[in-house]
Image (cartoon, rainbow, N blue to C red):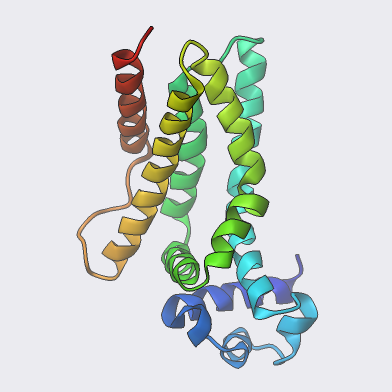
Amino acid sequence: MNKTQIKLIEAAEREFADRGFHGASVRDITTRAGTNVASINYHFGSKEELFLAMIRHRIEPINQERFELLEAALQEANGTPLEVRSLVEILIRPLVNSFSRGTNRKSFMRAMGRGMSEETQFTSILYKDVLGKLIKTFRYEFGRSMSDHPEELVDHCFAFLGSSISGVMHHRQKADNGHMRINFPDADHLINFVTGGIEAVVAATRP
């Protein structure tokens, strides 16, 4: 990705955060980025594609770290299924660490939240193109870790994990807007919460 594309993405984050997807115009974004008004179409094709590029720019490095951590853990396990806690940690820690130290964290979360609520097409594209491989890979590993339990239960536990992550992101966005008083969670806190919930369900339904 070149410098102009990065400037446009960073400007788009702030514009989408402030005005929403529909409220932010191409001219607003390019003015903030200091680029020609035609630069969005040239580099991305459309405002919609710019929004998706913004998401990929933030999420794909996190996903890459997740896959690298998973590969290392699987090699160390030498064929043995990973513990549920290990999988939860691999999914959560890179995300929390990234947004805890990121300078544009607030803008990105607000931009993503507003865009998803305004354009439902982005949700399906996000899960298919940006998170699809991640979901498929980790759902498979959860199945191995919980092989003694019904697939439906594994699906429920995996959905609980995803909902916990997205819920924290959503409520942190509200906190940034002054509606709630919470800090971005410590990774260990969220990992303990999610792992405890899954392990409690597993223990209650153990064959």
